Image (cartoon, rainbow, N blue to C red):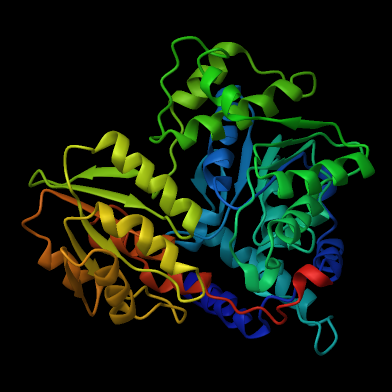
Length: 435
């Protein structure tokens, strides 16, 4: 088997959808020798900010000298981004080897119970991290938490970044239902840290923590204002945006709680947060001709508000040109309502996904919100980039899939567009929150 064949095998697993539950993952992990039992985890769930918080924790603990595994999703360009050790992507040869190892085990599952793509990749990651002798794994949930394949681990700490409306068709229609799914990662006696501030959602997390006898730390906006400077004086946080201060406060609270198990000196905390890197989140690029492009995967209403706040604070003197592409199953009307008023001109584009929203529908929504702005529906991101070639400041947003495509088209990441299709999935049931 060669790498393209391994990727095709993983792609074909999409046929099995996303069957929420832990039975398959436990069984597959057992066939792999239960590698999760040889690893230490920090488990991270939440609606927004999971990836950035994971990246901060990884950077801090790597600066402290640990060998750190990082498991995140979706990937922007390459599948290999999902599984990293000390921020090095898993190698192509290792992907091939792990696929070949798991294939015979998959044949042992009964008809109708075949592991899904995410279940297989979760166990691949566990096996790889154990082989690599990782001292710590930063472990991001895929969707939800309670029935997410990543939830077969017992971590040192559980983090729930925040709760807002997203993936309602799978997680439930209310903040309380969504919070119940995210709070499913809370384990008995394991500390949980959250920045959730929605009362309805926070009440669910507090109740679950009490039932599990799990010490709960709530990190609020006041803590974000005090940190990270109070923990590491003179710190310059490398990730842009006011919201990253709250993510940093979450990461720092977690580090503080785990100091006895995983001691980290103050200077290592400072070094970790100063050097953290997480592409596609308020990532400002200056092209060779001097044009600036801001990439941000604001894929839900809360993310759009965060982007809007960042534009108002950091780019208040200019009106950006907006290139917007959104997935149809997202609540995209509020995204348009937040971002359209900020733009001088707008170009709506399809996302490279079977789930893409129609650019014509997006354009019509944006025109109604801001009739004075020129709004054009384009057939592709490339078309929109051509039309904005003379603009000084362009914002590309609406979906992480679109951001990944932009990174390739702007030669900021190795071209590997076929692997973005691995992010596609359909759930077998929409009744997740009620199971």
